[in-house]
Length: 201
Image (cartoon, rainbow, N blue to C red; front, side):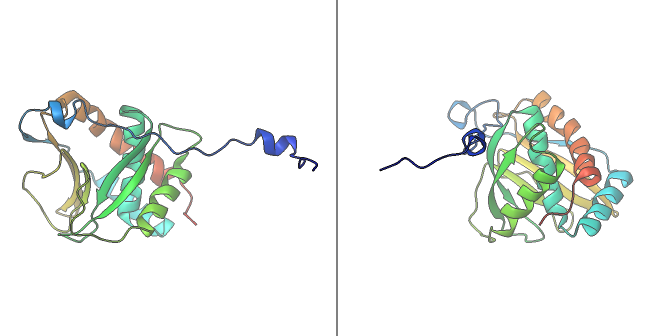
């Protein structure tokens, strides 16, 4: 039997691989002290609010899709590249959608690819009351001011019409400077996605 011919183009095509699991925490749960919830808040921004709302309408996506893509970019730039399990709320107070999010610092995952990835995973993820990933993207419906129940929660809510972005974290799992770095990168990632991403398919 003659072996099938495989063109050079096919031979050189990269083989897709499953991304490695990324640990975004400074310390594992087993080595951590009892949970100590702390909030790192950021100032409300009319510019970021207008940018996010305008892009969501223009691109035909939910705000949470842009925020998830930006969180993936933020983790990629501050914690490394790989995949992270995240629960995402979207107006449902008691339920969230568990997804596996790709975290990438840059190419080949450009803004369009990051948004497409967020759109695809959220479209296929049903709301579940019992979802319990260690990371929560909480797009809150109304003002929420209570400690988080996860080791890391990015809480996005509207206060007087403006986006308020708070990072709630377990001090026994994450150092303050790690959260500050993520908080600095996140608005930049949002602007990158809203400015440069094309509408997902």
